[in-house]
Length: 248
Image (cartoon, rainbow, N blue to C red):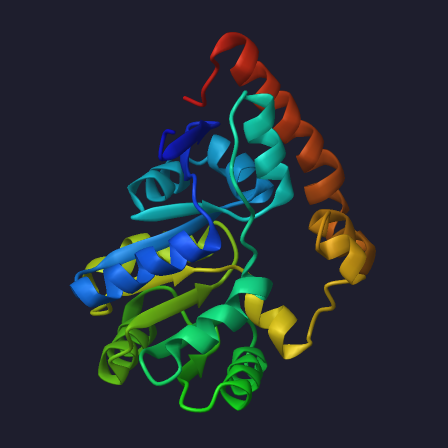
């Protein structure tokens, strides 16, 4: 089997959660400067018109599947991805794996939200260390320099960055050389769910069709992303299958 699947010009890793966690463990142990990214329909749709985002995803050490829609897209292309890995699910597994082993720095969301999410994880996993900060700092200049200095001073093994696409990817791309952390992992709005700020909706939906669960909980904000975005994604994937089309 091929290790990657090309979907709309982005190489998405074919891996399970166990394989992803093992890969992250190896990257932490290596002590270099690795980057972990994810692909869902919104990310892939955005990358079509954003070459910088597409380049970031393809340059990442891992770009894994975060969404049933991407698995469906792989099927349309005559391929397969073994499972989806959504941050609101795997973050709890990461907390258990990191407790007593790895220090985390979690950056993102509105002031107070990520701090609350970090507290939830630390209370559930004795020995887990997380430094948390919000994601509304200036993205350049003195404030950004001070943020990077705080991250480096905390000496985390993994930096989690949740600012939304494409802001989080752009910020990591611009600053990765200065961030002295073995693994930088973008993870979207995970803190919003863990903290309880945003509901994931009915479990029967988010375990199978998370896009529909999110649409039901935030219809006014997300209807364009899911109703129009999902349709556009499937049309693009079908075009890729039939004609070999890729974004410029």
